[in-house]
Image 1 (cartoon, rainbow, N blue to C red):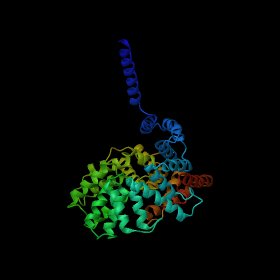
Image 2: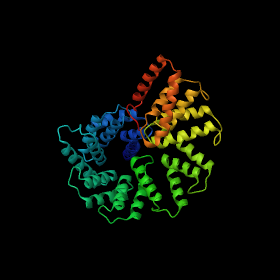
Image 3: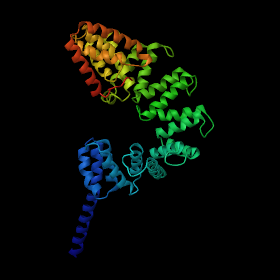
Image 4: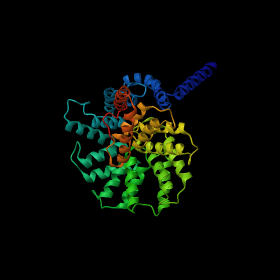
Length: 414
């Protein structure tokens, strides 16, 4: 009679062990958690053997690490190889990412012509699109629209753009909006265009597509069209984008409340939006090319507030700090102001070589809007030349050229 009891206990123990085993997170789950926590080195350590063992999802995730340079040195070739392994196993996200790599870098399939590579990218986009991957649907629609890698087909392009847009993809929404805006394959319909632009504009603040959609909507507003009934609705819409982190919307709100043309002027509200645009977006501050124009314009404005002491408590040190961020984004107003501050020595210790650097960079801008500041910078340089020694001038010229090239503005005047 005791054997069945022992057998039952043993069976229960085995079942419990099995349940505990199944409840333990898999290696792939641990890799996902590490990635989400920003521990990319651990994610890579876990993913590598799984990928080498043929796990398609591990191959895909390892490829993403190599593409982004997270946890490993960025390596497009390795990313390409791992994406291809995963795509060969019908991993649809890998098909999409592989197609993107091929479409952006024709050195990865050097044995194929450019036309053949475009055709391969289109094929992969189609596979992922048919599996329901929204960004792939948008890209496949775009390829169909322009006839890249396959014959152009406007009607089919609209079908795929719409499918992507209805899943919330900003590129699909933007492309569909443009089709209605221009009457390309559908009857021209400004309201329908605005509807899809609005959907694109609230996705991924700071992204190229989002910014393009917002600018087109802004033009609609300026032309007296678009979905807003009045200025209050337009400003409320801008505020919704600004609260999502859209730097350009934050800057525009600062300007709107400053000039009081479409809503009553409110300098306190204006200042707060300028501050948000200047300092409330760590990613924009970390990357000098992310929202460079809007971020630098806001930084410059806030610096002038700290210097004047009218809209913010006077603080020359904070002003200099703000300007130091703005000048590396090639903002002509900030470069002229910072150069002048170093030249005059009223706010900081006089430094003719630093003055020369920023005034020279300001003087090189070629755009029409920058010419007043560029001309003033040239005049101030003329004053500097009169008081600098030949050795200081030679050193300043070398430092200026070295700095400009070192910070990726070598030869740039925009």
